[in-house]
Image 1 (cartoon, one colour):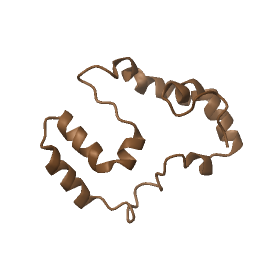
Image 2 (cartoon, one colour):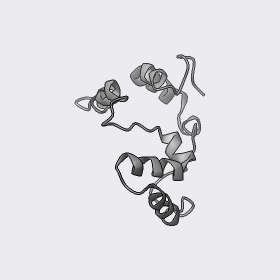
Image 3 (cartoon, helix red, strand yellow):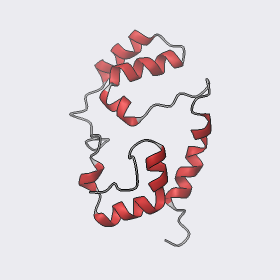
Length: 113
């Protein structure tokens, strides 16, 4: 890959927040919560920021229509298994395997397709 930083290096630059995930100034929310509980997630974020929660939830509901979005792919939880080839699974395990487990997405390194 030449001079391109590894995925692990990039993730670890971002993941410096991990040791602070329980600090009161940081709100950590997994993608799955935002995807599956959109209104609740939006209201929780608004509350964390000191904004009116119910109003934020109502506005979010009126603005989001995932069926016509051209910005994102399906965004289904676990959908990676349909996108990754066995070679990509091996690369992901090599680069981020311990983080996948640490973040609670898998219980051990036996995950794959």
